[in-house]
Image 1 (cartoon, one colour):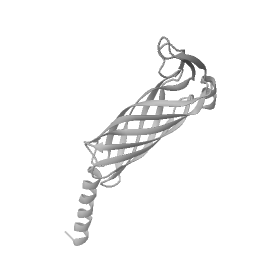
Image 2 (cartoon, helix red, strand yellow):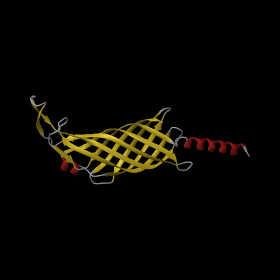
Image 3 (tube, one colour):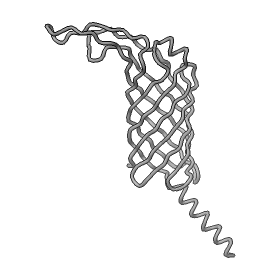
Image 4 (cartoon, one colour):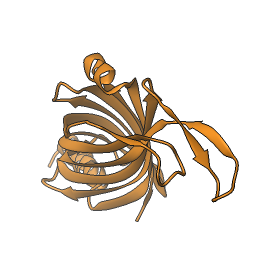
Length: 198
C-alpha cells in the first residue's frame, strides 16, 4: 500500500469516526420559539400575528447509516400572544373583597413532535431536516379568575417542515431551527433550544 493510499484510508477512518460520534444521543432541555400566524387568521381570532412559547423538550438521535442519523423530538410549552380583542371584567378577591377590573390575555399550552434525519458535519455539529406538527390550546381569559369569561382561540393542528443545526459542547447542545408551516393558519416559526446531554 502506497503512502498516499494510507493517508486517504486514515482520513476516511477519521471522518467516519467523526460523523458517527453524534449518534445515540439523548438531550433534554428548554426551548424558546416564535411562530408567525397568517394575518387573516390573526384578525379573525383577535390576536397579534406572533405567538411566543417557552417550554421543555427531549431529543433523541440514533444511527441510521454510517453517515446519516435519525432523530425525534418532543416538547411541551406555555404559549402567549398579543390580545387584540381583549375584554375586561370585574374581579373580587374573597366574598367581601374589593372589586377591581382586569383585562384579558391570551395564554395556553403547546405540544409538538417531529421526526427526521440528521447529517453530522463534524464531531460537534450536525444539520437536520424533518417533519412534525404542533398543537396550540389557547384561551382568551382573565388570569387567576375561576368564574370569569373565557374564549377559546381556534387554531388548527400545525404541520410543518423543519430545518436546523445542532451544536454540541462537552455537556450541552444548542439547537437552532426554522419551521415552515403547511397550513393556511400559520406562516413560519423560529426556535432555539438549550439541552444537556444524557
